[in-house]
Image (cartoon, rainbow, N blue to C red; front, side, top):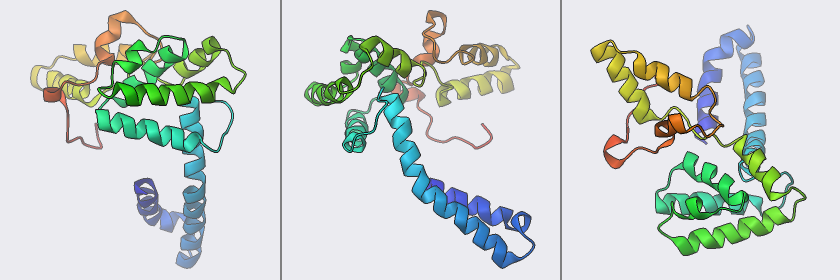
Length: 199
């Protein structure tokens, strides 16, 4: 919904560029917005299937995804790390994934359903894990790290943290021990609740 709203605001700004006739410009913009509204859910689910290592479509996939997202929210686990650790579960090592959740029964129940769904496909565990690691990054530029590097640059003129983070995200899908700090979710006191578009 918020993506649709943002697209509509962008379209309003672009109307004069779409057509000199205001009515025609609105018609063109509305056509694209209508396509977005129907196309986005399909593409979102397709992307989530990739994150789960699923290469075929099943009617129950959306519920499987929604149940994982709800479990993650209830347990307050990190989005990026959850999917990255699910890659290990795909490779037969679910401990790190399970360890993220306080509700172990819920995590185990979801893992069982996910495995049953994944086993209906032809990919081997190893191939599935490899495919998942190609779409689930080990590291992302996290807000708390961005805030640290901005502070270092602005307050101390130190660009070292910026260059270190930049180096860490050049190969975000590889598990590189020297960049492990950039994979960590923020601690409670490190959480950033206000960001700026320019960041």
